[in-house]
Image 1 (cartoon, helix red, strand yellow):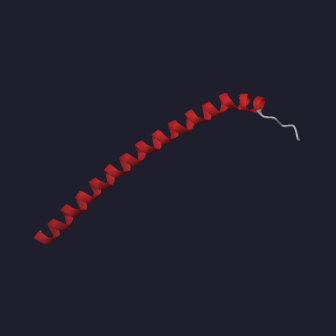
Image 2 (cartoon, one colour; image 1 turned 180 degrees about the horizontal axis):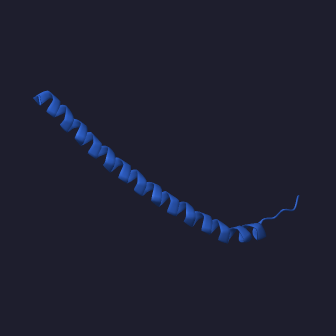
Image 3 (cartoon, one colour; image 1 turned 120 degrees about the vertical axis):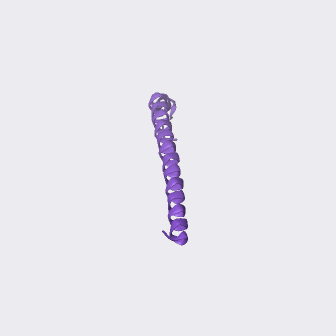
Length: 60
């Protein structure tokens, strides 16, 4: 195998590893985002009745 080809293959392997790492980070962030959304929805469900109760719907 030529040295140039070997160097190219090594660069490809390094880039693939970097891509795998980036994908892992994105998956982790997506999981965190989903957990945050779930918590926010739970908070909204708890607060919604109170907000409705405290909202003045009268027209002045």
